[in-house]
Length: 115
Length: 109
Image 1 (cartoon, rainbow over the protein chains, first blue to last red):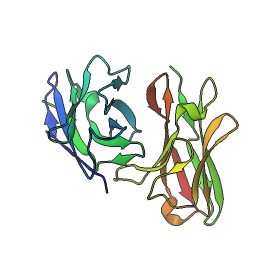
Image 2: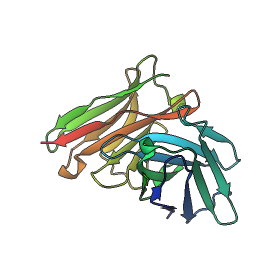
Image 3: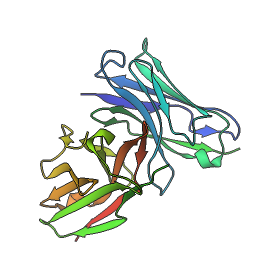
Image 4: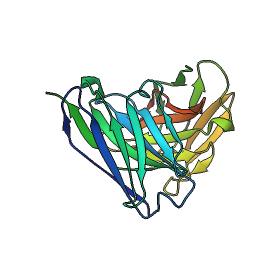
């Protein structure tokens, strides 16, 4: 069974960089034809797709976030990561990592942007 | 950029059937947009129900099915259960970018 677990700081100051890691177990992030993605959800709102990386290393990003987002693979630790620069209060949300297909989700980690 | 549209809310009777749809503000959803469907209960992470239009996730009950219907992606729930009351989101690939719909609040009543 594939399991994903997000980790990272729960509080980030405005203008700083948000960094999250997703640890994958039960599957190899480098050994299958999959996408490893990040999604976020502000409190009381819908889901927003952030970006993804394919096992080949190809990335795709939400155009509205593209200038601030980087998703990367760490094959040695079977993890992938999200970096979001120049954060503001609008980036406060629960952040999820996923594996697609068929769509396994982590439990999510809340991140608050505040001084 | 195309907006992905879903019904804001729907009501289904216990044991009844309901169809949720996912469309574009302009254009037709096809299998080439690789529609996904997710279920989310309050305070929980989303769960994938359907991927690539029709494929059930291993944990998806058989009462959920995915299809294309009238130019949209569709999620059919046949034999609604009380535990199916939740928010449902679709995700479609548009110009290489996965994009979520705004969600459908499904009430079982």
